[in-house]
Image (cartoon, rainbow over all chains, first blue to last red):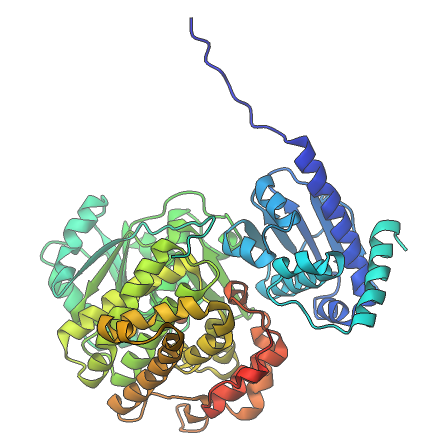
Length: 176
Length: 414
Ligand SMILES: [Fe+2]
């Protein structure tokens, strides 16, 4: 007798864990970069008071949330979207797309161009957040990799960049 | 040929094109199981006698439920909701949109409301709000440029709350687009020129943009070829039926290209100039297109060079060495603007300082350029542009486009 196999959609725990770790790291790095980098700070200052956005993977996450608090300070707000008012949701359509993005095989721009991202919210805010993500990537990644991840590698002065980079790493890893 | 590692392409619109394509409408609606359409149009289109031409072509075989001819020049949420109520009241079962971008957007908006059995379009904003097919929609463009007869977007403005809502869904694609030369024969020279350059920009930006793919490339190249051969002709001689039909085809082809490959910085700056200074979209496109080519050139040299084939023709293309082709493409677009300027009796603007508003005053004062550059930073089309642009870059491009001079290649940061 033939047994008709049923296939369940898989969970890919390792890839999911990797993306979750990267999201956690990027979320905390954004918080640090908003303190350290003038351009990132200015981008957030231009957004509405209390502005909050999420970046996550469809259908069930992982997700990270970053938002401005009452004082206008940028904070990483964890992964749980429940009970949070989120103004801008950026969702990668599937885990494989997120892997391409977070192993930096595909830039944010290319991921958008290839229709891997869904953006739900105001477009000007989405533009600002993509610019922030680009700057944070430049801080976090070695130049060789970051050059693939962003359209134009910025010509920052070396000393300033190294100092900021150390502070952003310290913020992201140690929460300083 | 560049084959992307991944791409998506979707165009499910049936296109019917010809000098007597309108006569097909009754049969088309029958195939779609509809028998009582509502016509959506505006006063300008109706006043030019175009609705009468449509009615003349269909009315011995078809009952028209209502002719709604009061769509404003700028799509409006309240008008959408009001006309949706009219559609229901008159027992209509399909929509025929006759007009330009605003009419198409309005008809798409009405279609959402009536198909979902709702009373307010607002409930359906946001990604993925539409989940099933809508009522049959037949699009009859009366300009050759926007391409909205084959696109999946509807932009509707809420003038009370100063919001611009974009609805994006494959269900918003019209079922059928009718390209009939009679619909554009009365279009004035300056509008013919500007809307035609919008189509040209769709094709060119789609071809060198980040989402280019073999299917959008094919439609973009065909569009450019038709525009190169016919736009100046149609502008010089508005009653040239062949040139009109060619341009209608070109606009639809370019629409297919850019709705799948998207547009870039020419549209980013064009949208911003439109919203800050109220300059018509096509006028901005014509002025800015050479700068999109110049600015992105270092990233797309070989791809841009290929555009000289549909522009210059096969013989000239073959005779031109590879390294000169992009120069020739840029020169070709500038010359085209000059030819359109001449063919329209000087009404087609070549640079921003030449654009005037209804009272004849400069429409883009130089001191507004920083506002335009700031607005551009919030436009999503920038994602698809090959090179990055920040505020200073936008301003640099705007200043050159205002003056009408080529970009200084030394100031383009690589
Ligand atoms: Fe356009």
